[in-house]
Image (cartoon, rainbow, N blue to C red; front, side, top):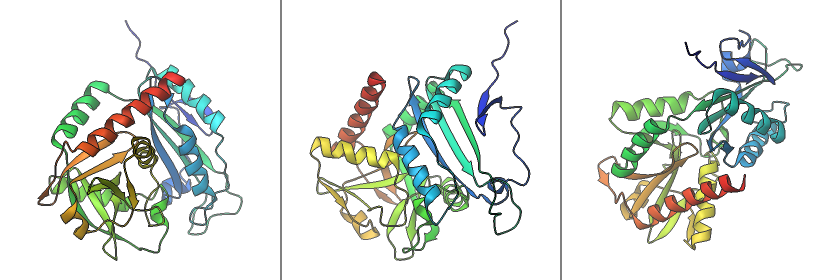
Amino acid sequence: MRRERQHHVVLNGELVTADEARIHIDDRGFLYGDSVFTTLRCYKSTPFRLDRHVARINASLRSPVVGIECEVDEAALRKNIARLIELNGCPQAVVRFRVTRGRGVGPLPPTDATPATLLTVDPLRLDEARHKRGALYERGARLIISSVRRDPKGDLGKHKLGSYSSSLLARREAAAAGADEAIICDTDGHWLECASSNLFAVVGGALVTPDTSQNLLPGIARETVLDCAKQLGIRVRLEPLTAERAEHAEEWFITNSVEEVIPVACIGDREYAVRGAVTLRLAEAYRELVAEAARRA
């Protein structure tokens, strides 16, 4: 009789099975969402742009918004990802890494809290992912405008915080409307990003996306697309996106580290070209960059 493979995680630097993993009931990540995290893809056992994810999470940890005294070591994280890929048998994987402030009850954290970390590596079900992504890529994503609003002068949106309720609300609104994603705006009416993806428009052949000085996440897939645009000689304009801009755009697409580049079919009632030339070129360039990174590893 074949034994079922046990799923392993790395909790606070220790390798344990998922069933053995225990987080204390006073952990502030559990109690208050007092944590930061990142999500990335592994292709053929190679984590894509892990260095960028580590740099971003460390910048968040040092920021006044988060202020958790912890420094993520890229080499150690890479080693643990490789261990979990082997043990869990998933060369094509989704990696999630989270840092919480540690234990402490009450609105003000204790000054001596010890941060907790959790690393999970889960198989990306390629048949399911290709079916979902293929269907979504062919028909294009349907977007709505969420009721969620952000402070245009705030910084919370620039970090991947464990307190993820606003993004979850936006995704529930999208699902209730029969859409795939929801655009989150600031109170000045600028379209910042989607609940779990960055947002791009193509206007007059140029790629337009908000600058990260706005209250939005500096996505690693976003950065990858901008690198691809530079290589392809596609003009890039870092400008606010608005409802008015939607009237003049020829194409839209969204990006995240798991689904890469997904074209947008409609925003509300307004429809767009799904197989637009710029979107297709960037999607292909992204895939080529992923393949090249896997070959070099």
